[in-house]
Image 1 (cartoon, rainbow, N blue to C red):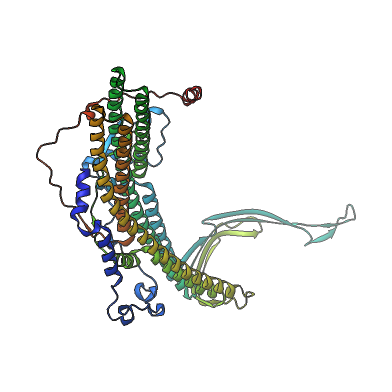
Image 2: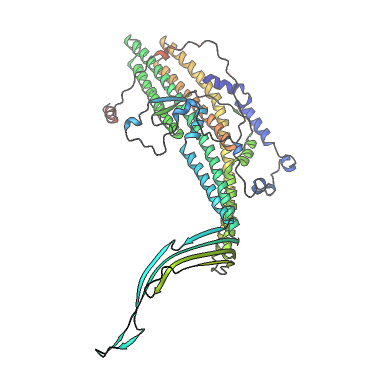
Length: 575
């Protein structure tokens, strides 16, 4: 499988060699827009003649989900048990987080699980719904408002009142002046109802506020697409990293087995008196190095599994594994210039900044509306009914009743003529923010091109490294075989075997790193350009029968005890 990855690049032709790459780079640099005589002549292009983003995308670009497949919402039957746990689930026992299943997954399955389970994507989707609700709230300013109020529905009022000073007289007994008070009672049932309809005929802040809400909604949709694409890239990168860790474990196991065979041969020769103790020590040292490679690989594998599990939000007792080994996923077809131009047209990051410019302009217009008149039409309706009397001389007449009805229609206007210059200052601030976003657009444009170029150059480097490291692996493997034969024949020493075995291990690690960088670069180019022009590798022509395995693969690897670090450090200090 690993040889097929290298042969894929060899069969792909000229991309593997340095000179054809230069020839292709020269051909790409010679490409120029039709009709540009200066470009065809090799002169620099006048940058002022380039089209602007407003001309290409419009002042208020809309998100286009059709340029990328939408996120999946359901899982197939074979992945249904891997549904994400409830959002608020929180294990409180060790048994609930103990891994009970290692589930092999393909890259397509990992991406499907991410789209359905990932909580970050769900949160961004909720933000889109919030922005949509905010837009609907802003649009409601076009409609009239209806207010209903009731003051006592019904209300009962009872009271008693005593008034003095209305009738003064001289008491004949005491000869003093006294007052005769007047007593009144109240007992009344009332019911009042009012309704008011108001509609702003002229509201200068209404249109810019709705426009800003609409742009915020489009920004939220762009953010969702950006998050979806970033998570797909993260899922692919995490999966490739898991494949790389599996390859490191395989290399470590193979190296440990080879070191065990070398150590066994060195001890046998030492006991036979044809080798020295130094050769045995060299074999033991190499075995320790290879065990460290295996330990690092196992640690990296565990971390890669759990990192992918967190991204996919898998159940707490499941860890994913890579169902496929690491191999080249294909050949990138577009040129560097085509990739850069496609990225400019594809990336919603640029659209978001254009929307920020539009939002700032809308906020500036809304700020000026604070000192502009507002004209409204209103209709106020009031009605009430009462039964009983208030402030009546006892007894109160309960049969006394009445009602009222009022209706008023008119126009109302408000105009804040002077606010100390606040509205004009807010207008300038938002216009300045729009200019700041223009600067941000230029910086984002340069960053996007830099990202595409970095990925393209990494792909070119990985392409060449795969070719060279694959030859290095084959050469080192053959060198190790010859060194062992020479050592068994007594022609060379254990040092040569140890050195060639270390070279093979390092060559295999570099080959695995080249595969990882190559696949990551293609995944990044897919994400950053929106293109999917990747030519699949030709199937390798493998023999019908599996070739016999080397005897080293049959050597068992004993598990290493997990000794505390304190004891290990004391042993090293004593030595």
